[in-house]
Image (cartoon, rainbow, N blue to C red; front, side, top):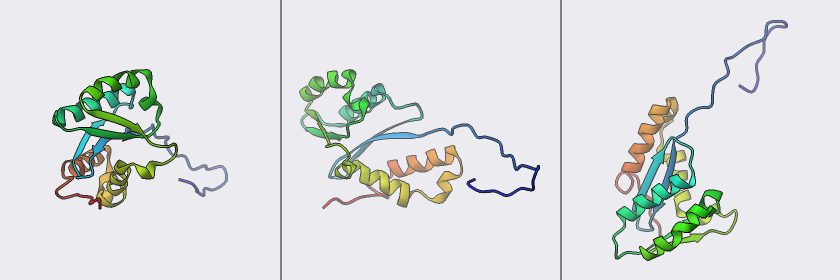
Length: 151
């Protein structure tokens, strides 16, 4: 609450809220609209990102190749992450890094913007459970009920 009024010597006191829970979604989006995603309520670490990559590799056919475009977050540049790149190349998965400060070049950012500002109803923000349910509904409905067309 940015502003409030109360009589002198009668301060308006509100309970402090603890930091709210967070739903993190990591995703891979192809130009054909195929979405592979991984959700967690935990802090995103390199290990979390590696779990998402493992999920992508399970979804990807062995003959197909994939190019994953990433920003320059420290979790994408860690020694642990970099140590996996050769293994991924052997599975036809390649990692490319965006130039600094250029999220507009990453297709997944378009999806995140659509989810946050167009596809989630206001009711999604009533509670953490409601947010989680609505986000999962949108993610699972991507490609059918929710779609982005890249030309």
